[in-house]
Length: 189
Image (tube, rainbow, N blue to C red; front, side):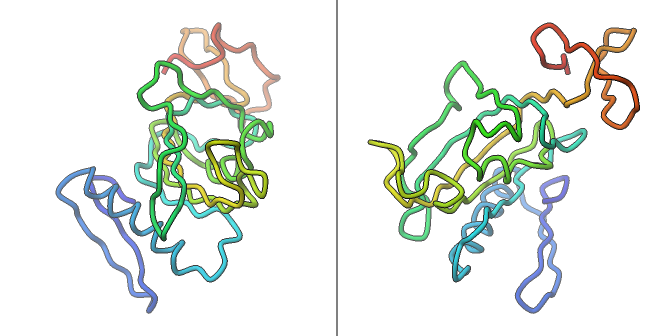
C-alpha cells in the first residue's frame, strides 16, 4: 500500500507492478482480495497473514504500547469472508489493549506489530493463533480461521510523556526515565 491510492506488489514471477486506484475504498478492497488470495494459495496457514490497507502516521507500535482499536471480525469460510462474529465499529467504545500483555488472541499480538496511528490492516489468523480447538461458544466454531479488519485510532507509546508545552512527546529512544502518563493514559493527538 502506497500513499494516494497506489498499491505496489509483485507476482509469482517476481515482476513488480504498481496500480493507481480511483478511490481509497477501491485500493483497500483490492488489498483485502490480495490477502485472501495469499491465504487461499498457501498450502498450510501456520502464521498470521496481514495486509496493510492504510499506512497511518507516526511511529510503529511495539510490545508494551497501548492502543485503542476499531475492528470487525469474520469467520473465514468457503475460501472467503463468512459471517461477522464480532465488531465494535458501530459502538461507542473502542477496544483498549496493551500489545504484548496476552489479553487478546496471539494473532492480534503478532499481526498488529508495526501498525501506526490511523493505520488499517487486514489480518487472517489461523486457528492455532486464535481460539484453537475450543472456539468461542455460540460465536466461533472450533478450529476456525478468522479475518479481522483493524484500525488503530489512538496510541500511547511505552515511553511517552507531556512536554513542557503540554504536547505529547515520544521518548522511546531517549535515555530519560519512564515519565508520568497523561490523565487518561493516551496522548491528545
